[in-house]
Structures are given as structure tokens and as C-alpha cells.
Length: 71
Image 1 (cartoon, rainbow, N blue to C red):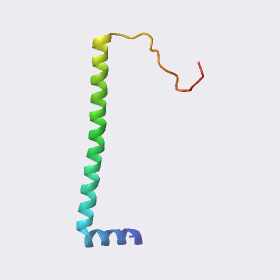
Image 2: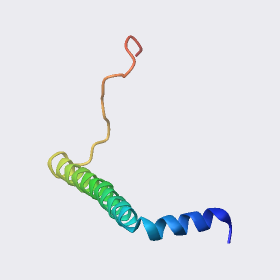
Image 3: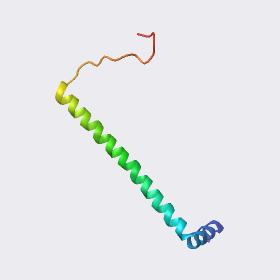
Image 4: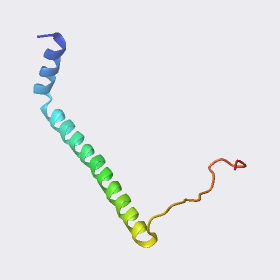
């Protein structure tokens, strides 16, 4: 077994509380990020559905140019 694996296994067995907290923290942060993306997609879909219901299909969109003084 290579040296790095022996050191890693020894640290996992000695510092098991740190490992558990690390795994729980990773799971919670992953769940929060995933939840954010789900809520964002749901909100976007809801807004597009409401726009389509109230305005129907839109053929042309007129918007302000992002670059000043350029037509």
C-alpha cells in the first residue's frame, strides 16, 4: 500500500469526528446549491408561463443596447 494511502487511512481512523463533520458539511452544501438551482429553474419557468399567458407569443423584442452610443 502506498505511503499516502496509509497516512490517509490512519487519519480517517484517528480523526473520525472530523471526517463525519466534513462529509455532513459537504452533503449540506451540495443540497443547498442543488436546492438553489431547483428554485431558480422553477421561478424562471413560472415567470415565463405567466408572461406567455398574459402577453401571448412575442415576435419582436425591443431592448436598450448594452453599449452606449452604438445603434
